[in-house]
Amino acid sequence: MDLLRRLKTETRSHHERTEGAVRLMDAHLTPADYQRQLESFHGFYLPVEALLAGPLSALEPALNLPARWKTPLLEQDLRALGHDAGSLARLPRASPLPSLPGLPEALGCAYVLEGSTLGGQLILRHLTRHFGPDARVGSFAFFRAYGEEVGPMWRSFGAVLTQASERAASSSFDAAVVQGARDTFDGFAAWLTRDAGPLQDTAGTPPRSMKNTTTPVTDT
Image 1 (cartoon, rainbow, N blue to C red):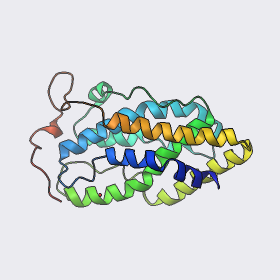
Image 2 (image 1 turned 60 degrees about the vertical axis):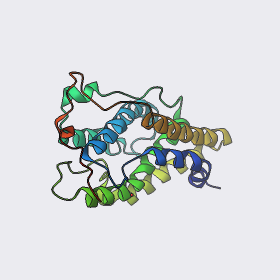
Image 3 (image 1 turned 180 degrees about the horizontal axis):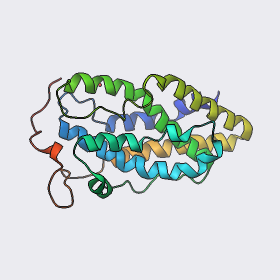
Image 4 (image 1 turned 180 degrees about the vertical axis):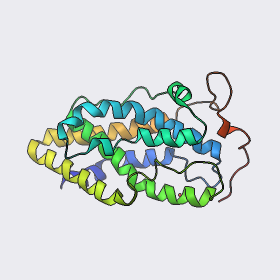
């Protein structure tokens, strides 16, 4: 079994738990709900991408890391919802983070983040339809990541992952990739389901996009 298929098979239950923690497909999602989910995504992606930069740099330029970072897209979306540099800096960040001691674990983590761009297309269609053209919720930059290049970017990541596995020619390398993916799914799910009250900034005032947004928006 090649590594990509092994990853899909051996992380399935972890993937499903994480998918269940994402509330963006809810029929009664409000702009405030959407904002809180993006803030949680930001709290995970920001420190995790910082961790990934070092080990994954060994695979440049084939991996094309600058084109793959999602934190700038999340910050673009959050700015559209009322955040600025100061409030973004005050958002909580996930802890503990997945353990990524080396390249194989980092590749497993990247598998999770890159794979999310595929499911993100379904979420994008839902959000676009759910909120409609007049809702002031931004352009969904995070879920539009790669645009028409989603398929090619996923295939190019898969090729880099497969080549790294073939070069290592080690069952322990592949096992570490799988473990890195499992730890990332589990860490993300734990972060998304942590106990937290309604989001407020440090001055106690909700960002402007959270005001007057308690009426559910009717509508995966």
